[in-house]
Image (cartoon, rainbow, N blue to C red; front, side):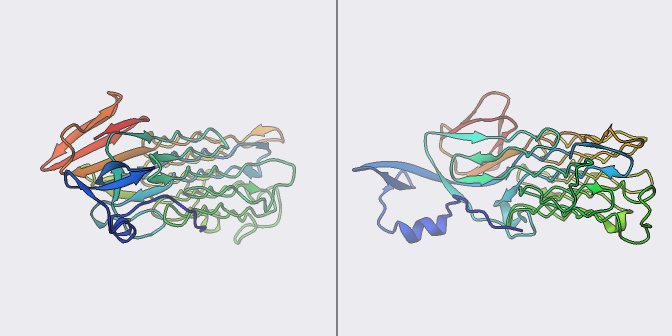
Length: 333
């Protein structure tokens, strides 16, 4: 997995860098320009980007597209795990006033999902698409990097490596290897198995081609009840393989007899890949990834806290306010 720089601001780091800050209404004050200041308030968060689409392409029965990777998964609530088997992040402090919240869309076929964010404070990267297929010699082509990586495609006699997930956000996609035992070298019987896309909780599968399922997602109780999100899409495969989407909404991979399914909406899940039987020219297009979600949990929230538009929700749990964004909008505090 590869590191990506983010703009996360923790309470601890703020204290180290701003020992001389003034206080206003109990919140630390960030200075801007000559004498300007803006109060801030601490929040915990779950920021999940849109999942990658399943791979696309055309070819023959020996080709199958890979499953899409889940969107980047970042979590600071109650010591819960973040994506890529990383530890829980620190809470952040966001400015009072209006802050933009972006909910990433799921990726189209063969396309990366889009990022989700809380202003510039927390940014999660869209999931990578599954590997595409075709007769143009795609073996070994590197896949895009995403929150979680996409699964490699079946490219006949060659291998396609899975895409890399971003450290702290997700796992790698599985690597397709049609030549692995027990499959023979005869191209009329080998292949037809794309690998699963990576999930927030585990890598995509290939397992000698008998298991092309997507990687599993992660559960969070930030809203008060446990919900699993961020599953990878299953790889397209011949019918004998297990090609389920990962837990947390991952789309199922399709075979010559079944159709792949899309990643779950607001679960940041990857779309399934596809395999089609028959002569050259048959389509191996997978399905779209699922949209992401942003959840912000605030203790001792400002009295005027609100979210917009009305599609999003604001609930209370004890002293906490929980803002859930299923579409892009704003939080005002």
